[in-house]
Amino acid sequence: MFPWVLLEFLLFCFATNYGVEASHEVYTSLQSLSAVNVKQVYRTGFHFHLEKNWINDPNGPLYYKGFYHLFYQYNPEGAVWRNIVWGHSVSKDLINWKKLEPAIFPSKTFDKYGCWSGSATVLPGNKPIILYTGVVDENITEVQNYAVPADYSDPYLRKWIKPDNNPLIVADESMNTTAFRDPTTAWLGQDGRWKILVGGRRKHRGIVFLYRSRDFMNWVKAKHPLHSCANTGNWECPDFFPVSLHGTNGLDTSSLMEENKIKHVLKVSLDETRYDYYTLGTYFPQKDRYIPDKNMVDGLRGLRYDYGDFYASKSFFDPIKKRRIMWAWANESDTVCDDLRKGWAGIQTIPRTILIDPNGRQLLQWPVEELETLRREKVELREKKLKKGEHVEVKGITAAQADVEVTFSFHCLDKAEKYDSSWDEHDAQKLCSQKGSTVQGGVGPFGLLTLASHDLKEYTPVFFRIFKANSKHVVLMCSDESSSSLEEGLYKPSFAGFVDVDLTDKKLSLRSLIDHSVVESFGAGGKTCITSRVYPTLAIYENAHLHAFTNGTATIIIEKLDAWSMKSSRIMLICMHSTTALKPSE
Ligand code: DQQ
Image (cartoon, rainbow, N blue to C red):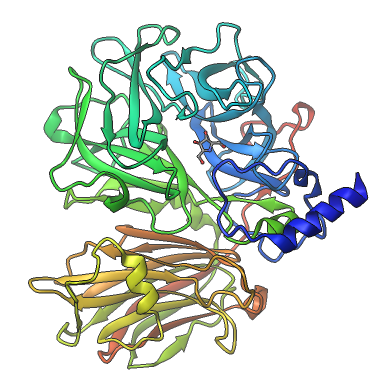
């Protein structure tokens, strides 16, 4: 194979630059070139990724007999999207992982061309079952299949069986068979029927089809989809779950408390933009209809889980700590050639707990508490004033692998810049690209310069800028990749979102998880989240620096900054075969 494949690799790399992974792009012969000249600089220390090869969507997370199980779309043969199987890893704490053999892989007529995304449901009697999309032919005809554990006494759930009565669900004549995928976790209605959603589209209308079953084997499509929206394109990886309006516990997917005690979340991944959008609304179980709340917007102009590199998220209910946890795929934003050179591609975000904001208008996301077990050396800053143009370096931690929590405060908002009503309130990213961290403002820009080189030729600033609109203040949060790397030809967007926050106490908080090639940030306690994948060439390892800064005329106070070096998580990358299995008590 050698000379031809190498030639093809070189031609490919010189001829093309694919900044963003296109949907289901197939690189037929390049896959075997993984791990050529492996570059380790961008390996993450505590974000889940594999030693080599490609991963994308998180699939079917679940808790079983002492272990959290994470499955993911995985190419066992290369660093590009192809040969997709369900990779499988287990953890006792959501942070340290052991890789197992793939759980589900193409082998039958009903999934010969691919085992695509899906979800797990734990049936009564503690019996997990997986629903996933099988691709049955070269035309990408999609069907919905199931798999069950071969041995329920194995807490690792190593072997999965795909029974012969698959597929369970095929599209009817009215449906588009190539846009019919990614079944959700099922919920059990009071009518004794299980319900699931499958994503898709009719022409350009995004749809979540609803199916019902009494026995989990025979599924009937409901006359009406649960929800749909014109001009939003294909809906992938839907997720539908309740959130409690009272208290801080997450809810099981089947929880149906009285209407005034819960809201439902419908999340869809829009194939056209490759971002995850959600609405909050009311689910009417008798009619199986979902109506988004009055101010919610479906599609491109709606709320996003994360305003950066974040797609195909999936949540599950953790019955042990009574919380809802969500994962997402943070895609590379370097080139396919870079991925082939480094030999691996794709990480999972840090798992986040999801709660509804007490204001009822949005969700709050926060890294799972277990992440804090990786915190090591700590540095603190208290009541440190920053005047216009000032930086303060946060020294004494490993700035390339760190967890930073900071609360900024300001005396008043008089100096806030005027918000121009002609700006598109749904295009925060455009505003951030015009008003970056070096563009002087009134209150802000202020925040952190992460992964900064000593001469500030490279840095990824994560910051706020406060504007004064007619009757309110508008807070912009940016994670700007435009100066993140000296390498040319990379995709370096100025990711941004607005923050719906009450500024009465004149404070804004920010948490950033910095991990070599990823900066995952949580603004105002998780109201607005932005994940950036970045590839610094100078700001690597001990040459990476961290600063707090302001570049506005108003003085900003770092009221409290705590930063920690982060220990690497143990991700046992090599496949754990049955003979080397560790005991569940370990
Ligand atoms: N990825 C899977 C599909 C899903 C898409 C294929 C979303 O099932 O729709 O790898 O990234």
